Figure 1 (cartoon, rainbow, N blue to C red):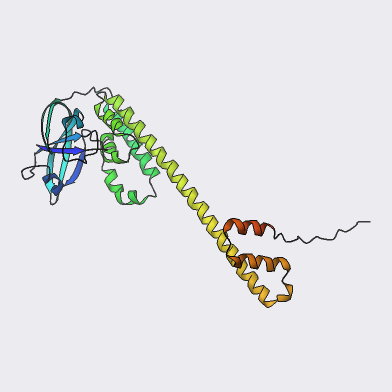
Figure 2 (cartoon, helix red, strand yellow):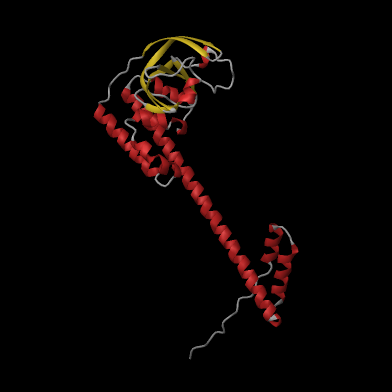
Length: 273
């Protein structure tokens, strides 16, 4: 048995995923072979300490199997959830007693697939212009069900570790689907808000940089004109030049520049007979 501990993610049944063979070898005391059983153990806390206690592991896990090995990669497929009736942890070694956890199939497969297809479509639309999707589109299109979508994006879901476990622990397929949709769409909306805020900030910065560049260009051109026609330089222009060359901070400069209000030429009025 290969014991695969994890934290901050989610592993649901009926999911296929490739893993580096070297990573799996570190979790087994024998060479990895096709047909080897795998047990995904969800931790309550990040595994930072060498000593792992039984109470650090949630009492529901996910069972899987090594389906194939291709070069440096092994394809794992999860099969079912299990109740962990007994857990013994010694260092990084485990001994567990488990039994299959039954599911309540209260949602027909056609409805499940329809909701999965919509979820994937919404994700593709939202992430259309992202660099991640440009490289992962073909990978995403190979996902077969909602369990795969949620499992393989679970590290990006904006929910707590306990909330992820709540999804795993739900026996009703219908209720679990609702929980997955809720977590997914809330996370997608948060991504949209953050992305829009980032774009708005970028646009604001670009406008500020453009304004500063135009002001520098105007100051340069005004300086060139003053050199060509020094007789036209007014007292205000001389004062403005001194302000620019003074090296004062932004606050002081703004205050000084506010005093340099050039008079607006007045157009003589004409009386009509």
